[in-house]
Amino acid sequence: MKIALLGYGKMGKVIERIALERGHEIVLKKDEFNTYDGLSTADVAIDFSVPSAAVSNISAAFNANVPVVSGTTGWLEHYDEMIALCNEKKGGFISSSNFSLGVNIFFGLNEYLAKIMNQFDSYKVSMEEIHHIHKLDAPSGTAISLAQGVIENSDYANWTMEEAKKNEIRIEAKRIGEVPGTHTVNYDSPIDSLEIKHTAHNREGFALGAVVAAEWLAGKQGIFTMKDVLNLQ
Image 1 (cartoon, rainbow, N blue to C red):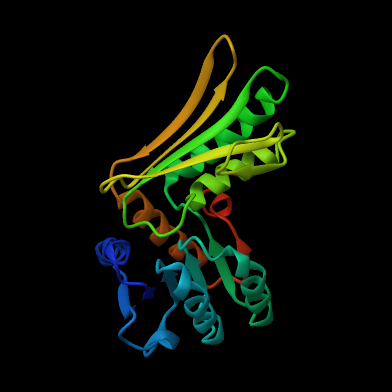
Image 2 (cartoon, rainbow, N blue to C red):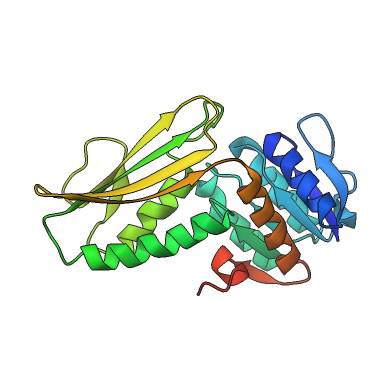
């Protein structure tokens, strides 16, 4: 399979190594200093860039009739535009805040726990995410996905990084050293606390998941999620 890498930072380089190990070919390594030359020859594009470049990268791929796997976060105010472009071009698209297998299992556990805890008014949910100091957006896309998972399965209505109101989930974002990513969902009551936590030890899980998603998406049309890729529906 021919892969275009849209974004060639630390994650892009790990994705490249894993893709080559799995027998794929890299036809483009797009960064801020080069063009999209070679994109049209790709079977699939993997976008791990920065928020300011994501929309341009994804648009270029759809316009070149190349399906896209995007792990960039912080650009989702333009998500509906990209969905419309994908549909217009009859493309394929998977956008996820986190491609790690463990995190996607964590998403499912979070949703299930939210349904259970919604029966107990004495517990207040909050979240903490810790990432490396180079991460540009806060809170992380993964934390937002976790909050959305609670909102969709409970009486909570919104998330905030400020002091939370009754129906809001407070997310605390920390930037420390080179931490790949740690996410904790807390339920606190006056008498006890319950938490679920996912800790990434390196970038390997994110990269492998992105390549697996690209392998799955190649040749398909439509809007998909990691639940489709991993059969977690």
